[in-house]
Length: 354
Image (cartoon, rainbow, N blue to C red; front, side):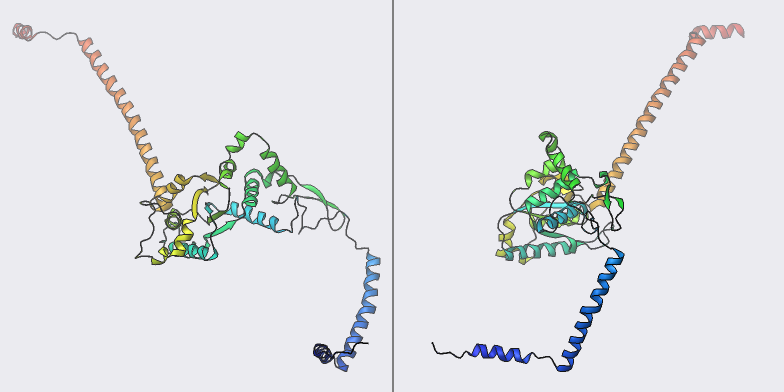
């Protein structure tokens, strides 16, 4: 028989277990409470359940967890719901392609973007500073593509209600029109299996070719040309419309880490008010002078000039008609009077009369 080896660890565990002792008074209270709780209420609950017969129906659907076409508790489903909500609530979105940016480079890029957006002056139509709500985030491209299909081809208002079992056992009309429902899945499947040419004419068909590779999006809570111009001067500078900040004004912009991260970003397009814009279109929106106020002023000027031109045209037509009628009237009056006598004949007639 091998000799026993005394282990200090076992002794330490034994002492630790021995220290976890319950006082006799507390133990007595605990035993009495557990015995009381395990005896009387359990039989009472069983008796009440047996008398009342409260059992859920087999086909009961809880309102907090409606039926879905895909599992609703996985991360992909939650990302899909996040992206659909983002697409519906974001009027201005820029799409970038990034190439293996490190965490330090992302931090430097977001820092410079935050500084540039904070320096944008507030205008009359933008009395609230929403620069803190402008975010740059990396997305899952395939899930974002599915979310874009749901937003583009699925209309929740067109879903008809269905009869579902309530908690009392009766049936009531319930509409399942969430983004993970079977209605959304069938609508997307029906829209994408049609003609490819017709699909390419939709905003999704125009934006889908851009969603290739690693994608990052810059979201704005409202359409602001001033904030868009400030963001493009940092992320996609193109002088003279969107020049990068000078080294004297912002020396941190020219740090190697920030420049390395910015060189790995490529602006490929944008989504503004549900419409797809290419790089030139995004530059046009960012180059609107004086923001939306300037655009409204240009529209009012165009309408006023169009109205003035229409008024001038109508007045010119009426004036020309009036001149024509007056000239015709004078010609007709002269024809009725007859030819005027010569001056010598008129003098002789006057002498004879005198």
